[in-house]
Amino acid sequence: MKKYKGYLILGLAVVAYFFMVSTSNKQTDWNEHYDSKSTSPYGTKALIELLQDKPFGVGVTHTRKTFYEIWNEESVTDLMVIADKFFAGDEDRNSIIEVAELGGNILLAAEKIDARTADTLGLELEYEYSDIYRVPEINENNISDIDTTYLQAGDLKGYYSDFDLSFYIAKYDKETSTVLATNERGQAIYVKVKVGEGNVYVLTTPKVFANINLLYEDNHYLVAKILSELPQGEYVRSELYTLGRGLSSSPFRYLVSQNALKWGFYILLLTLVIFMIFESRRKQRIIPVIEPPANMSLSHLNTLTQLYLKKGENSNLLEKRKVYFFDVLRKRFFIDPINTQQDQLVEALSIKTGLGVKVLNKLIDSLEMATTNPTDDKFFFDVNRQLDSFYQHINS
Image (tube, rainbow, N blue to C red; front, side, top):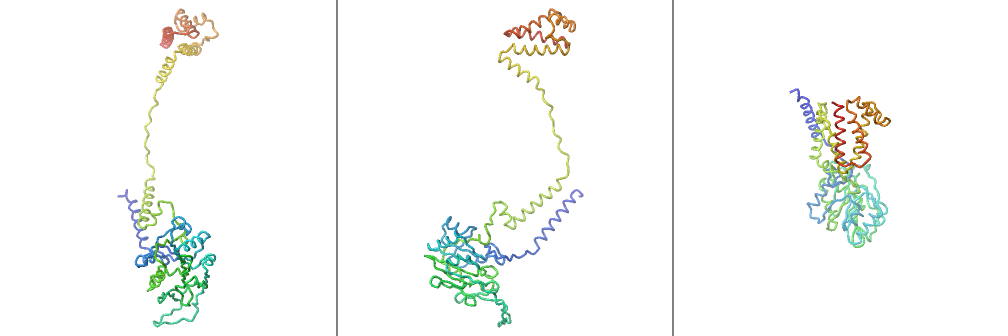
């Protein structure tokens, strides 16, 4: 049991940790990102579901590309953006005008629009500070509406926080623009601008599309009215202006985007860490089997022999044996074969080895003849036999 005590304690700690994480309250995201997949207060997932449920005839797909990229790569004729601010570059601005002039429709739902785009559309946007400091009015239910305002489209009204809806369209060209919705002060907040064969719809209160506002009481009726003003078609909504490119090439991007897969991945990593902790203890390493080096002498000798036989250089091989023979005389018998006369050499060698003078003279003469003249195989083998007999005698 003691052997598994550590594993048991760690297992209980992991279970306790994940229980605490799963039961802890998740912090609410109040950022105004208008993410189409988010259920946070300022996400727009409820808007997507509304479009699917209501028969508007308005289909929406989402992308993280600019208007310029969408127009040039996909040739889409209906565009949409929902953001807190929309600051277009020259390429995006020109794409909006080109799409509209060719009969397309664009919805720009943003509190702030760059001056050049607004000027191109003949609009001027202003900010109206909340009049929250006015004397509060008490309605019939004895509830103060000090921070409540409404928007109106036709006969429909939607009620919102006065802080959320402070932007409006101060000026517009009455010949090309049509007011579709106003705030409680009668100021335009939603207009349709005629551009060529198409239209650009400008809404300065994108927060009406946010989950927190759309799902409040009957506000979805007003949102439905706003959307119904759009011509039917398949719109491409760019979320790049609020979320950025936001795409990673990492294969883990999808894992961490799904809650179940994310926690499964975290558990896997934690398991690997635990495994490394317990397996990092020192263990007896495997004793390698060391093979003794092979004796390649005979193999090498055989290779050299085959080489010399193939070339037929008998004299060359006997020259090397002669050098070795003279080396043996120097080192073993202390006789200098180069600077000693042959008769003196033979006499001294005969005394030290016990071999006859006649045998030694024949050996030395044969070596001299074999290394200075071409040698046939018969004479070659005869000289080799004499040398072998000499070595066999002195080593016995």
